[in-house]
Image 1: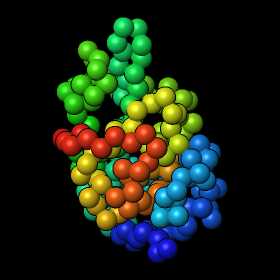
Image 2: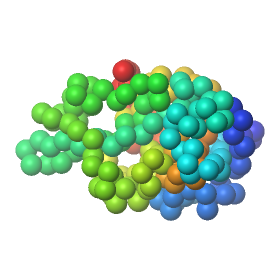
Image 3: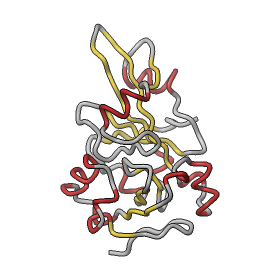
Length: 180
């Protein structure tokens, strides 16, 4: 299998370099049927933010995905969703995500909770290896990209995933217009 390539990032087989991803991400990749199509790229942690990363490695913004965590409640039950959207957009939290979660109000999960409950570093959160009780919403625009650059759970690396494979992430729900 040929590893995905994007910009000037150096692609390595993620299954051969699980030490470059968060523990929960490594565990999820170890049992995911599509993991052989995923590459990991080691980066300087100071370049983990989208703007710095795309500039440093000549990446198209539309092929970069950001994963944000959103929460709301209904009848005393908290509902959390990870939303993977193109980096050129923002998750439509107040309308589309709120409706998907069926809550009156949705907001970003506070950073300390996001880090603690995901087991991932802030700025590196990925949809791969999140708690199974959370929903995973993936913007359909990313599934049409040849390759998408997403977090690895750590700030020191990124994952390169064929867009078509994103819909095969465990519990993934592909949503049109998730990012606006």
